Image (tube, rainbow, N blue to C red; front, side, top):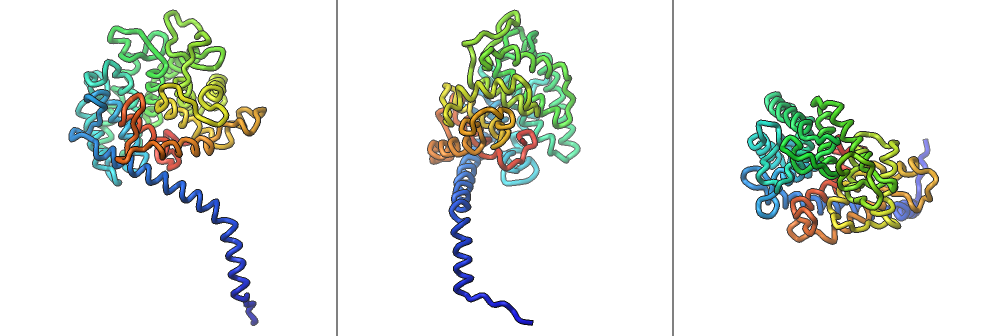
Length: 370
């Protein structure tokens, strides 16, 4: 049997043509991924170095310990580590132990004295972190401890909810019936993470909170800071872009993409946050981009077109556009020690927020899946 032999010069020419046709795009994507991986590693190592012996992270002056510990822990979980194994298992194990030892008998997560009078934020982020840990925990003894802690945390949230369905900086049971959008969203995400992990969450709590956000939506599609007494419809002019972005992420985390209000929130964000394919500043940029990025990740590159088929392609909000713009910004603003600063919450918050966005494509935590 004869064998067809291709001259080496021809084979080399064919190989060169193939390489030339695929290398530029492939090499560019490879460089982008390498740059992202390097940013993530530097950021995670900074979190590792700044964890306190107690297992917690704090902001300047020892404040917001509960929220900072939860957010840093989420960033480490997204790397792929767990409290039992992985590169950051020791840090995660210490963070979980901190919550188990410092949380209150009434179900409030963490230590309220360090939260600057705003312990509901830490409670919400804490539920999200611990629910993600619980969902992957296999040790029966640890699961039992976490299950009890999360059940009490859910009960605390239910009692902390205001008459209008939202949450404020402190529990309504502690004498305040004030509520506002950003704290309401931290509770909703935390409660949904608990439910996803198998913890029973009364449907009435979720329903009241969702209705609160809907009532907080103006005719322009934005969410206001505070609904105000009486539960009257929100008035145009008081919208907050950052809170609206958080509302989108919250709506998407429930898998509800076609909801009328979710679509209104997306349109409002497009007009205020994402103008002409560029992120706009709101004064709370790290918080705003943290939530907006989660929402855009769920949109991917084609879901916006399905939701708004009449919009021109160049105006679509896509993950590719957001990723290119935002990741380049992160690369240019990361400090030499691996942290990010300059945000509203301080370096632990901003670093954890950015690391969350940089790691979404790993698809490690089910809560952030598309």
